[in-house]
Length: 249
Image (cartoon, rainbow, N blue to C red; front, side, top):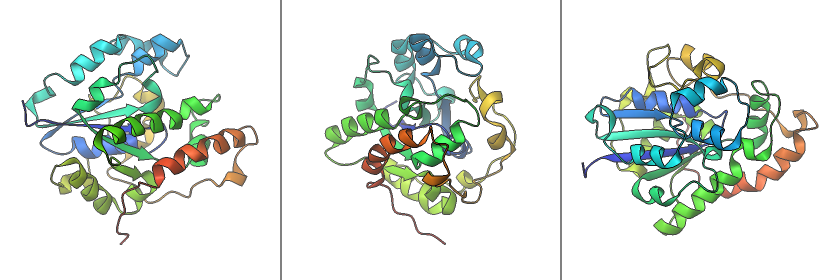
């Protein structure tokens, strides 16, 4: 179908990425996919993530097969395919050329807030685990092709003004805003990744975007996390300077 719009949302972990997926899935014209490169990433790296075996059993391990599927027919014959991606899953030897055939968008969060949240679920963390260097790499590749910055959303802005943020994102992606994106039924989804029991308890209890969070300040971080936050900050700033403006109500 030539009129299909494939939106690839590139995020690091512990942002509002799953809530954003819920938001798009609540549209009647949209199918969603949850982190389709996760199993390929785990197979290639050998990393021990929560529910590793379940993830490996649930998805293809060959990144070329994942890409072929993402560029293939849209599930359920929909006209929009929202694909939630973690930037760190795109390892350096995974092909990037397919990015030229989709509409790329980026979701960011301050690194100290990401780190504080991440270590609540997985004790060990590195700069690569939170995906900011990879996010900048993908962003710059897309921007070079477009000759302009692709859309960047700040997770805190989505929580503060969801209708304004989502309306702006939809305009940039070439689709109409749908008010159904603002609320959804609680509970799990068949579209959720196999890792959902380890990570999605809060989003499964949600029925919409929550209120803005009280973000962790740099001084409040554990000492071992501060060097990672400092290394991540320039990458975050590179992206955040292009963030979509939202109207706070």
